[in-house]
Image (tube, rainbow over all chains, first blue to last red; front, top):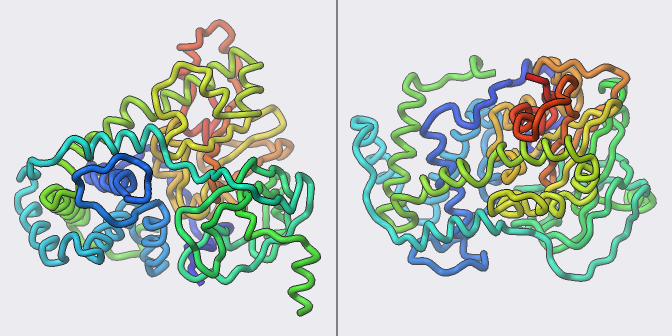
Length: 247
Length: 205
């Protein structure tokens, strides 16, 4: 039960940030570049092989899992890119690319001498693949036949799937009812298999409309609708929800 | 939120040193090159950014039929324009535009993370990534928008779109009053990322 999966609708949080900058410190641009390169070089993509030594999987799912595995107070305590830096450093250590000791030691060196240059190295094929990744993207859409249980206008129930590590189901929608607004054409994978949570393989995705007074009775604003894009596994017929409750 | 927690006094200097050390080690170990990070950053200066979104919205303002096509099939409409390579690339593979109207105001959020339509808007601003925004906007969008200085009348319906799967949403704001004589290029200058995600409206200069 991770707070990070249940953020929608929390009370008592205080004012929002209205900061319009993407990065508030120059160092943040570097971890952004590293994350993007890792996604581009990740071996499951159908992109040309390069001399890069990066041979393990890294997708948005891995970045998200890192943030979701934090103590929830640390999730609020650390800024966005601080979370990235922690998660990505940990990944490179856990996967044996670097050791914690050498990262700590080199951090000390750059801390004492911030202008010390970076090393000078690398094959341009690596950078060409990174550009190709950005240009071509990584679509989750798959050319497989699937059956669509629902059509636009149908009322649906949102399942309370057994989530452990990661999910694409916003927690505040569990056990609620909504209406199908869009049936997206085709079938869509997710970047990883979420295990008991149930997404990963190609399946339909629905845009579902919710009534906030159902989500937060007597505790939501008026005259607004909330929509969420939900993988088919998270959605079931209301009769099925009733049946599993009765069971 | 930030005052509640303890931070090391050299918070930024430490992070700067640590990310530089990480980048150096990754270069040394052959994961990336010494140009990789800058290559990524350059891409967001020239190919993916709000400059694309501004062109798309300005075209929608001068050409109502284009606006209809943009909402009906967003990638297909975008492909009509002369925009840089990558408009259907990373984080733009499945984009969907929703249009504001006198009776409807759209707001895009991502309660699970920070999904954002990279090709048309580049990288997300801090406010969009703020867990407080992501949380509160789901339940009290009108109150959140007043904190951005935007008062949406009670009679206007707000539609909040939570980006929880493959779609990367953006908003086509309404063309502001007092812009009749402006060229498409002049109109582009009035379009902001905030207006294209729904925490602002476009205003005449």
